[in-house]
Length: 226
Image (cartoon, rainbow, N blue to C red; front, top):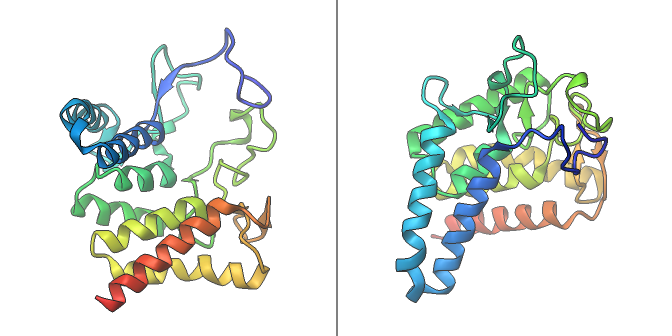
C-alpha cells in the first residue's frame, strides 16, 4: 500500500510470517548460548514460539510454510492463492532455527530444487516461487523475479547450504553451493542478488553474501577434515 512498503498507514495489513518468527527463535537460541544461566527464563518462551510457528504457519498438507497469516483479512483478491507461493528464504531460516525435522528438510530441499528448475534460476537462493504478480506491490522494484519477489539471493541460499551440512545432506550441499561460488568467480564480486537469468544486481561487495558463503565453505571444510 506504500511505494516503498515501509510506511504503516490505514491501508496496512498486519500479518505474521515465518521469516521474522524464525529469526526470533534464532535470537533466543543465541541469547541462551551467551547467557546460559538465564536459560530457564528464555527456554519456555522459545518453545512456545516454536510450537505456535508450526501450529499456525506450517501447512501439513502441502508440507510448506504459508506466506502470511493476516490478522484482519488478506489484501489480495479471493481468486489469488497466495499459499501456492513457496518461500525459500523463510524456509531456510526456519531450518536454521531448528523448526523442521530431517524428513521435512528433505522435502523442503526437493521443492526448492524443483522450483529452481521451473523458474530457470541459478540457485536455491531464489527467495520465493512462483513470484507475486506485478500488480501485487506498489514498489516497482518488486516486479516478478525482481529483488525479494523471486530474486536469487546467496544471502538466503548460503544459509540453506550451512543447514544441509549440519543435518547430514553433505552431497546435496556441495551440489547446491556450486552455482553460488561459480558466479562469484565469474562476476568478480559478492553481489547482493541475481536475476532469474543469473545476472548480478545491487552491490558487488555485499557482506551478507560473502559472509554466508564463507561460513558455508568453512563448515564444508570442517566436515571434510572430520
